[in-house]
Image (cartoon, rainbow, N blue to C red; front, side, top):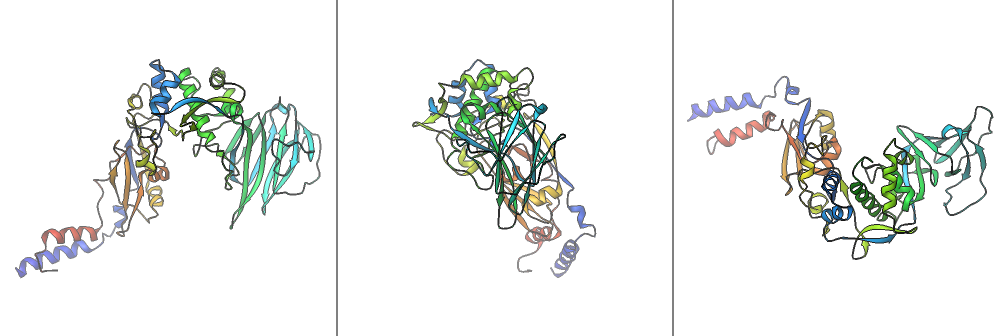
Length: 435
C-alpha cells in the first residue's frame, strides 16, 4: 500500500509542476460557430421579410411577432432628440455643395423658439466645434472670409435653409441631415467632459425617413412593418432626455440605426422607404402604432434568430405578454438570410479575457441555455484558477458575436491547469485517508 501511495505521490508531484511553457495552455483565439443576429427579442426582421415574400401584410407580420397586440392610430407629431455623435472632442459641419445658408445660435435653443441668431452665414462657410474644459468653442472658416474668434458656451445650435443639407463629421461618425436642427453640447462628468451632438426633428416623418434598419429593396409589407415597429419603439423613448447623450434616443443599434437624409436619397430604392413611411400615416398628426391596452408597446426587434424568437424573461429578466417567443424558420433559410443563417467567428484571446476581466482565458463553459438553445450563461476559466461568469447577452456584446446562438469548438480541446488536473486525479486515484 505504501509503495502504491509513493507511486501516486510521485505522479502527482509531476502534475503539480506548471509546464515550462505554461503559455502554451492559453489559446491565441477562440472559434465560435452560430446562427442568427441580434438579441432575439420581438420582431425578426428577416422573418418579416420572409412573411412579406409569402404575401402577408404588415399588420399580419406585426400581429405574428407581437401576439395579442393591435395596430391603432396614435399621436406622433412630436419632436425627438437623436444623438448623432457622442463622447467626441470635435464636430465639423458644412452645407453640401455650398448651397443655402445656416444660422448659429448661442445655447441649446428649443426648436419651437426663434430667438435672434448669433450670426448667419452662406454655404461657403464651415463650422467646427471643439470641447474645451466643459465649453463648446466654435470656429468658422471660409475660402473668401476671415472670422473673429467666438467665445465658448455650454452649447451651440445650428439651423439651415430648407433647401440645404448639412454634412456632419465627428471622429469616425459622419452623416447627412436635412430636417430639424443640430445642437452641439458639452457634457461634463466627474472626471472629464465631451461633446454630444444631437439633431431634433419630427418623429412623425422626418425621423422615420432616416431609419436605416433594413434594405429599402425589401417587399413593401416588410418595410411598413419596420416603420411601425421603429415608430412604436421611438415613442417609448420620449419621456426623458438622457444626460449622457443629451438625447431621447441614440442613432446607433443601442436604440435604432438612424442614418439621416442618406436613407431616403439612396439610389433607386430610397423613394420606396419614404413611400413606406408615408403609407403608415393616418393624418398629419397620427400614425399607425403597435399598442396593448391603448398604449405603445416596447417594440423590440432584431435581425434574425436561431429558429425561434426569445422569451424576454430569459434574455433580460423582464416580462411582457407579447414577447414570449414564436417560431421563426425564415431566419434559418440561407436564401432569405444568406449572411447569418450560419456564421463563424474567430475571437482573439485578449478580447475574451477583457470581456471576463481575467488575465487570460484557457476554457469557456456554456453553463445554461434558453428554451431556444441560445446561451444564457458563460463561465471563463483562467490559467491561475480564477473564473468569471457573464450572461449570454453581455458575453455576445463584449466579444462582438452576432448572436447568443453560439458554439465553442475549443471548449473540449482546452487543457486545464496543472492544479485542476491534480484535484481531478486526487479524487480518482488517491486512496481514502491519504489526504
